[in-house]
Length: 124
Image (cartoon, rainbow, N blue to C red):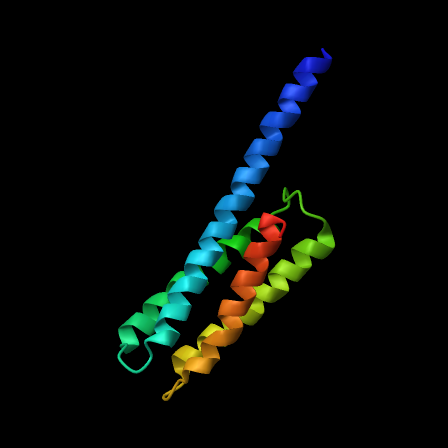
């Protein structure tokens, strides 16, 4: 019986770890896309900026939906923090999209937040 419990725990741990790794990878992908747009600002297009921002917004929309579900296993404080970060990111994204003359440094906060959350998910 004890071995079954240990196996169940290991399987659950693998599922949770793989979900966290997947979320971390998605955030890193979004950060990389935003960073690439920033690095290539002078030669980039408005379409590339919109695509990177849209991808990032989709990722955060999914995260926000997941943490606000009633069955989320996360503690209330963590859920609230992720939701607040998500709202901040949505607002920043909207401001950049509505800006008639966006600047590359406006992407810094989005890149930094994605990288920090991804590192936290990886436990580093």
